[in-house]
Length: 326
Image (cartoon, rainbow, N blue to C red; front, top):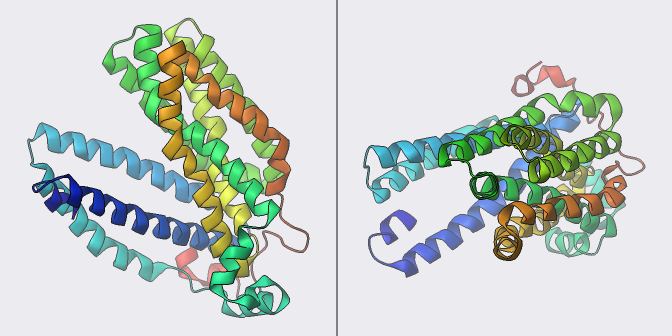
């Protein structure tokens, strides 16, 4: 609808974007619940690697978009091509998804709020203090990520007087650091646990933001961008894993956490822009440091609840399922 509405007017585009966002939101919840299921089956952290794939897809989409512009491919044709690829690729991809832990879900349903049915599960999740706090935790890291994605390049250009090419390179450096952190970070989670790792990484992110803002020299700002990206890398995916610790309530809790966290992507860019109009974009980035400093006080909420663990669900060994790999 977006691609064809582009030829007609703004109303079809708005409707299409709304439907696109609705579908993406539901799909995002499903992917994170599936990632948490894979973690339970494997008995080790792997969610950040799924989010690393998301980051790689973001870069790939941006590069493809730039290529389409360079080749002067019409926007409707480009978007239709993407729609076809998604329409064909997603149904094929979900065939490799793991089946739900049906027996575990039933047992949990009999023991807790799950017995009330799916709609009431969702309402119950919105009243859980731990779920809401995890949502705030995820919001802080989503804000840090969104600010980096949207404003690092502009902050380098306006604050350090660099060229547009250097600003773009700074953004790419940040994104590469975040992707690397998500790919290599799960081992530290398995070894030291969520809370200590996230607290250390939050400090690293804070140092990175401060270096980026007050570094004076471009090279120091680039070092700050690297620390910023690495430091925030695990926050969002670990928050999703924490929301899905209990299988029976995984979907409603992840949906609540995602709804709260995604508010940062909606409100973050205009907030930085508003503050930037008064104090420069570079100084406005300090909002990331303020929010992350506050969230360190609630990092303990991502600790698995008593009675749950990251160990595999009862059943055949994880390696017996070829979809999980080794």
